[in-house]
Image (cartoon, rainbow, N blue to C red; front, side, top):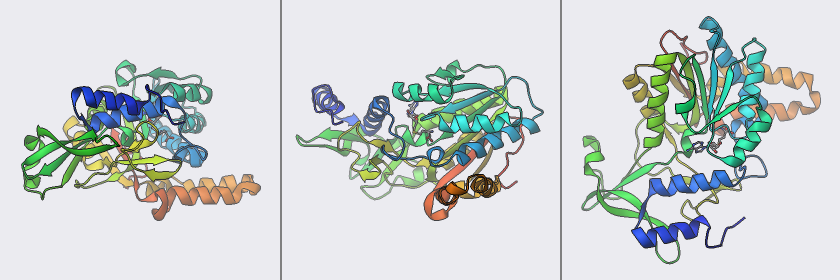
Length: 353
Ligand code: SAH
């Protein structure tokens, strides 16, 4: 539903910009997504976008198998916590926990979720869970098995842009008709790596301080408590320039600066940054590997064949879902898996070691 009233986010942003000046792209994205996710459940065929766990139960099951394998190899520690960031409808958690239970692995369940609407959906799927606003309130004793699927891409990115006068933060203004991004007044030259300082005017550098902060926090917890973390998202492996901010509504790409709060805003995840943070945080980093290769190494094709055999009427759907998850021209290559492991924890399956 379009919110045209005075309290819609569009009106709030216009008032804010009118009163205090342009807002940063990061501020715009953070507020727009908080509003967007809090409003309703955007997932699924009738919503705005679909994610891997909503395509097939096999995705969550493979993650459950990966975690159960980690737990077994680590000597089956008694008290363990399954922690998921941004669990959507709770589908991945439910599928993963069911797969883990087959190995008699029943960790405590902690869901980190900002949206009230989605917390309600998660409660139906995973009634035994405890909900959190962040990692801070998750217990500090017992290994953590952390999962984040399509979570980091929803976190706000900061953009800086090269102008004739030097680097500036990219900000959002309203020109009387619409919102649009422009170079702001604040100099940002000190934030630019020396190798890129002389980039041509118009060059954009993007970073995600929120993702970095979270990755540091996760690394510190794994180091202190043991366990592993699995990040799956779409992103790139080597530093790059350019804006990757995009908006999706009703399964179509739309202008990220039109109708804030009514479309899902995402940016590609910088996997090289996640690797660097592991190094700095003194945890081992596995991957990134393509989602397709990772799922195939874990045996998703065999699982699909088994499901197709037990439900012949749904065999075609099963094979179509498999193709969507693993084919390089679908989700298999753009989406990547990367894991952190705490000291003494096993090198997880599927990462080619
Ligand atoms: N992992 C799910 C959902 C992905 S959508 C799936 O794969 O289907 C992104 C999820 O992250 C939603 O649950 C959204 O509400 C949550 N989210 C986004 N930004 C957040 C934030 N800053 N803090 C907590 N949760 C957030």
